[in-house]
Image (cartoon, rainbow, N blue to C red):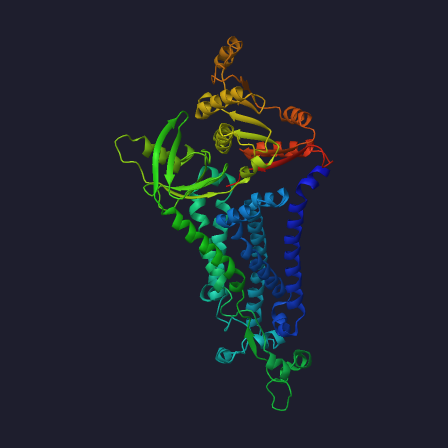
Length: 564
């Protein structure tokens, strides 16, 4: 527990502040509408659900203001660059952008549910008070006629006994935009589940752009002023504390109390979301401008296990290790953009990506490049954008863990290391790298086999064999492969990969690995970087906490995961 607090105190503080602001805004708005004299008569019809609806609306505005900021990729890359000299704790918060985006979305869903339920009660009470003929205060307030609406004196949006709640819902701006926003929100949230994103990315991509309807609906939702309060002039003339008890005499000429007049609550949502929307529009304009710059494909390589490698050039393109780009192929889909980690090094005169067939879009792209007698499809590129792997050279010891195609960011890092040794870069802070690559099939190892062979040779020639400790793990095998490997175990090179490092069968024993690293580097700061599934992330995260020392002078493990 102590290690967890040491590693995550800033994240916890940030979440506590965010949750605290939500609680404060809700309670403050609730008390305002529950106690304010301006809404005395409104509460006579609606009760406490008025305050619930308005308090949740304020929290919706607050969280809708935040929802777009974590997905402004250029903004995050800019902040990552300007925070290059910030503490590791502050920089790591930028890696949790999608986690915070999801938390804000869940909060929006919560307050949307509260808002809808409260308004269901509100409209039911509006309807019952309009049908009421007992002469109660609520019925008198609801009977303010439609003719007087021009004078701003009406309080109940249901203007006649024949008017239904459904009619008001679908003919008023607030009701119609509320329905549209709710449908858009439901579709966005349900299509953003892990299963949909992994199996049907196109569904997630298209439905998530319904946020445009959500934002537009939110901006105009308050127009029409269905929630109304007494005007200041009317309160000065006939304060509810003095006149509510004598509502039967409001029409008498001898009475000092006049019938109250009401005004709609001015729309405020647009004030909350205006700045983030402008920022996001600038973000999308910048993305569009960069995506229109010409991309030249210099080399196409088909690797085993249906993996496509594209090497490209683009004017003004500059990258760092571990970064990623978004790729679009107009001949397949004009609107779909997919993220891919760069596998090239900053020192190379091109940039490259490796694409594994994992859905309709990627399969269609690979098929298009496999057609030998067809022109090469046009590719559009947006980026690069920063990730946690950019910080790999800020650590004395780095642990790189790639699962399958998740090895791509570490290919960039390992290539960069090779170039740094070639150029005798003395500014390299990293003294030791542990690299773990976990694959299901043997063919995957050939993707970067040449790179690992070159690194082996380079380390031997420079006398730095101990700098890179890499382990390859095969999780899918048959008895023939195991038997063949056992018979050839004494050979200098591995029978599966051809490398000097032997392939291990099964999965790493992470407790043993972390224990060995902690023992070998008792006073080092160790960065653990993962590009792989969530189950593996949980295991590594726990190990980072378990083997980090409470003493800041001793070994510390910092977990970093690629998030797209």
